[in-house]
Image (tube, rainbow, N blue to C red; front, side, top):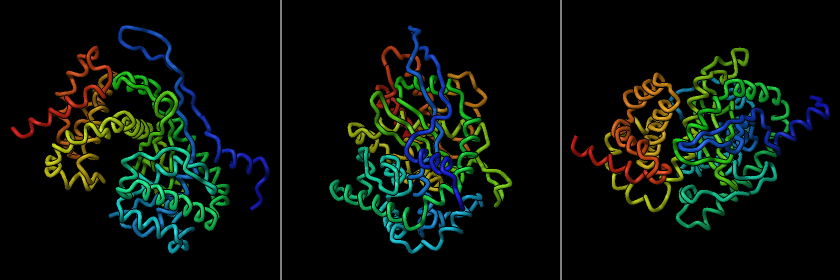
Amino acid sequence: MYINDSFENRFLATKIAVRTFLPILFILSVAGCSRAKKVKTITVETNYNVEALVIAFEIAENGFWNFPFDDFQPMKTKVRREFKKYREHETVKLIDTLVAKGFWLDAMTEVMLKSSPLPNARLIEDMNHSTLLRLSDDLEESHKMVANFINAMHQFYIDAGLDAYFMGNLPYYDTINEEVRKNIPNASFIATMEEYYGKQNEAYTLIPSPALYHTMGFGKNIKGDTGFKVYNVFGPLIVTKDSLEFGNGFDDLNKINELTVHEFGHSFINPVLDKEVYKEHIDSYAHLFERIRKPMREQGYGSWRSCLAEHVVRLGEIRISYAMGDSDRAERLREEYVHERKFIYIPLMEKGIKAYEDNRDIYKTIDDYIPKLLTCLETTEKQ
């Protein structure tokens, strides 16, 4: 297929430069003062490093093939059809090996986001300590394994001809990004979220991935100059038929809103819970995982620490909904999370979080309150 220079240049530019589709200006009012805050930007982009990873993961033996059902998303089907011949590629086999170690797609996504553009990628940001430990307790060995993984992705990108694939599908990626852009959450949710948690992030980026599993999403952070650069990688939000004529799977205002608020919420909560100083305190409640192990594992949360993080983030979604004056949404989320999805410790935490909300002169940020919030779990022993 012949591609003119302007089209090809536009594709190459999107691999290197972030395409900012929706600058959002707002003034964040903080209790006791009223002054303009730094301009916030919500960016929607296709990240070709992540897309290359999703394609390789899609055809791996331990990737999505073993999921209990398939939703027949059109780009997922297309990827499997076009790239199944690479299932024996060394990169795909390496992915299977890493998954067996517990280094799953979320960890690989962090590597891709923190690397320069494929095919000639290299790690340009520090990996999270907790992510490296999923490979080995020997951090030097972990770094070598990350480097090997990046090199393997380089080879897969070249061998599978992904430049040509992405270039040929650029109009489709553009359409997806437009769908997300028109359904972007209102800027007020970022303002409210930052005020509620007492912290600000540097930037927020949405990365829709059409071949990613339906409703799957990952929130990742990269340290910036004035806070974290926050990324939300997510798959289609709507089950569509096995043809692009039935839609792309991203045109849903409520689902994009809720997924975005959820994943961006992790950027405020996970860095606190990951602090070494809280490890012993958090682990002291690990026995509570047994009561909900089965429903948590079915949703992909295989450890107490990940389960706890989900509880706190979902608690934040409920409380922030109230802060935005949307009690209907708060009550709907509570019903879904507690009763349908079995995040049974949310009600206890919701009682405990009110002391934080009522005493912000004492607790400036959520970091200051996390130890006290966790103590509310002690009452479960009396139930």
